[in-house]
Length: 373
Image 1: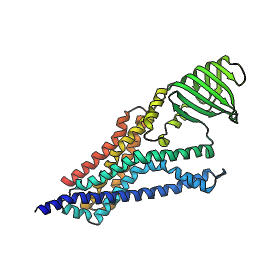
Image 2: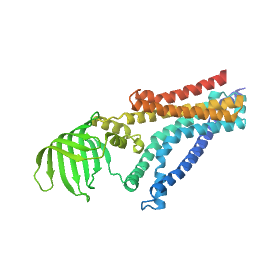
Image 3: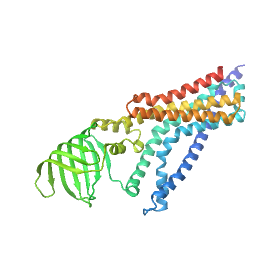
Image 4: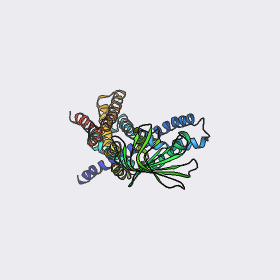
C-alpha cells in the first residue's frame, strides 16, 4: 500500500514535466513557423523598398532578420495560444487526456504545467529576448533611416533634457537642445541650437531662455544670442529656424519602444518625464510587459479549457475555431484598452492588466464548468 501511495505521488511530477516539455516544444515550432513566414514577406517588402537604392541582396536578407524582433515580440501571445491548442488537441486526439483522467489526474493538474511553461516563456521574453531584440532592431532602424528612408531627424533624452537633430532645407544640420518642454504648446526653456554645414563643420550657435515649436513651420526663439564662427556674439529679439517637424512626428520617434531594452525603460521614462513630455505610451508599454506573464498563463489556461470541452463534447474544428476567436478577441481588447489609455480615458494599470485578468477568469470559468458542471 505504501509503495502504491509513493507511486501515485510521483505521477503528477512526471506528467507535469511531460506536458510542460510538449507545450514548450510545440511553442518553439509554432513561433519558428510564424517567424519564417513573416520573414519571407518582410524580405519581399524590403526588396521593393530598396529597388531604387544601391543595396545588395545579402544586405536585404540580413536587415530582414534584424527586423524580426519587432514582429516576433508582437506574435508571442499568438504563438502561446496556437501552441496550447495544438498541444492539448493532440493529447485529446491520442486519448492521452482520457488516460490521464482515468489515472486520477484532474484538469487543474495538467493545466498547471502548461501555465508554468507559459510563465517561464514570458519571463524569458521580457528579461532576455526583449533586450536582445531591442539591440538588434535598433541596428535595423539605423540602416532603414540612413539607406531606405533618408531620415536624419533623431531624438535623444539625457539628464540635461531633450536633444533633437534635424536636416534643414539646404542640407545643413541643426541640433536643438532644451532643458524642459511644455507638452501642451511645445514651449521650451534654456534652449541651445548648434548648426553645422553639409560636411559637419560648425557654423553658428543660438542660445535663448525660451523657444517654441510652431508646428510644421519653424522654431521660434525669443531674446536669443547668436554666435557665429569667428564672430562676436550678438543679441537678437527673435530668431527663427525653418522645420518640418511636428509634435506628433517627434513623439513617434521616442514612443516606439521596440528598440529600448526592458531594463532601460524605467530610466528612459523618468528622464523624459523630467523633460516635460508625455510618457503615457511608454508607461503603458512597460506595464503591459509586466502583465505578460499573467496574460500568457491565462491564454494557456484557455487552451486547456477548450481541449477538455473537445474531449467531452467532440467537434474539434468548432472548438478550435471558438478558442481562436476568444483568443483574438482578447488581443483586440488589449489593443482597444491601450488606445483608451493613450487617450487618457482609462488608467494605465487598468488598460495593461485587464486583458490578462480576463484571460485567466474566462479560462478558469470554462475549466470549472467542464470539471464540476
